[in-house]
Length: 250
Image (cartoon, rainbow, N blue to C red; front, side):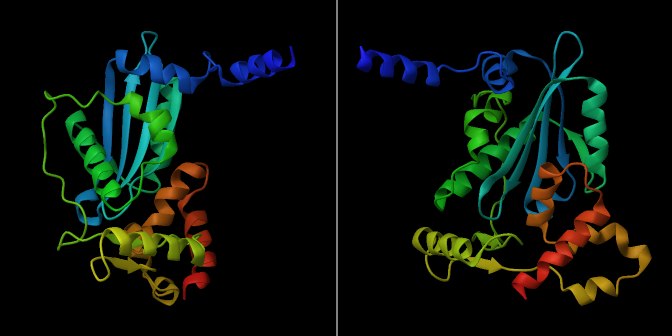
């Protein structure tokens, strides 16, 4: 009797929540028509792509998934989703994104190719996609079918080697772990590690009319993480947090 009770408890614990947004995305999202897809401008230069895929429900509401794809090293670094939200809420999120970067409408095939190129690139060096992609947000994408146009997506630096851009909140232990994995899978001398994109004193000397270029001077790994973890922060708060954390890497 006791053994059966334990078995019953394990079964109950593993039953999926059929009403959860994650479960519904897995089961329903691909049946919804695409509303639009967006991509961050300049992604081909910085090799960091912020992507979104929005689908529309019959009542006009939106399910959207966001992806942060690191074409330099990790592949899919971050992802999140909004399920069955009002169109106005989706548009409000896009307005928040504009505080950090410009995102333009693009064809779905571009999104698909970048995501799967990023996955293949990251796995080549021992990095799997973010867990939420595996369990939820991949199901808002089309299946990887033969009729989707294949594009050549460049990964790595100009020599085709991985580049690890150290995030401001990564500990030295994490840096060493990632570096060791790159040594094992890419080989010593076949990758780069970049700890900072700008120096604080250079930022302080910037002229006011150059502020529109601030993203190129910030730690891009920090920006791509903070934009989804703290969507209510404005760009000034992001910059201040980035500067405050910078001393850890100088």
